[in-house]
Length: 389
Image (cartoon, rainbow, N blue to C red; front, top):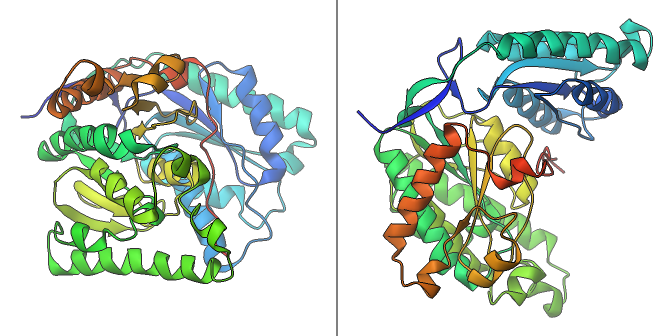
């Protein structure tokens, strides 16, 4: 038996670490109505986005899959779908996709209600009823094997790859070793490490999938930067990373991969696709923090772990984002935003194993109800559905 946390058991057997009501618009046209509904009902969060219409092919499929899977995330006890009524991605299609997990679910369509005021009133009524029901549910003991964590990072500096990311890898290994699931993404920030990651694959097919996924992203970047000047090329890792002491994409990648620890990779999944088994997974995704976090939450992650060397306040609606920095100066400047000061490796002589244990214990506490600092301050910027060209 593994370690335990206190979570909310859902009807489909999954466990949430939060007990909120999600207000999800099927299209950008209904985003403001979704926002107004959430404002009226404490304990609800909304997912405003710019997609859902004038999309075709795989681009539309990714949007549909992402919004459906967000609605399925076990951190949400219920979902109110808000549609306009004439969008390409039907609100009823969104609701039908979420329905399989058997959680509280209602649909409001603005054109059917008559106007936005009527839709807000109806949606708020649905959300209030759901929240009242959810408030009666109690946390219960659950095994670490039922946790899915997302590994992300942003605003990196030299301490990220040396301290924060390796320490997070130690915590990730502990969760995977107990039957839990960890998701590594940000493929653009893994270029040059594909041969190293492939050696940790559970079988030859997974190894080939890792290689193919990273090569495909590298070829895409080559096409996009073919006409870039040398001055622009050096900043492909982002100017902030460059100013923080990272000299190249490969140096960034060598540090970024350390978030995944040393566990074997069980497989490669598509963006916003939930793994069918447990273990460590690579998710095909861009490097944009918001798109990565959104894909991981859609894949079922109840908690996001986010090392940052230079500092960032961002969070995600309804899903705790635990911030870690290996830079003690950054922690002192942004201690109201950052949860764990891994920079004590520098200032106090602590070991990576000690910081890894600190991160692991923080995961258990947050899973059991402790609020991450991004939650306390209301940061929810990271919801961002990826788009395909």
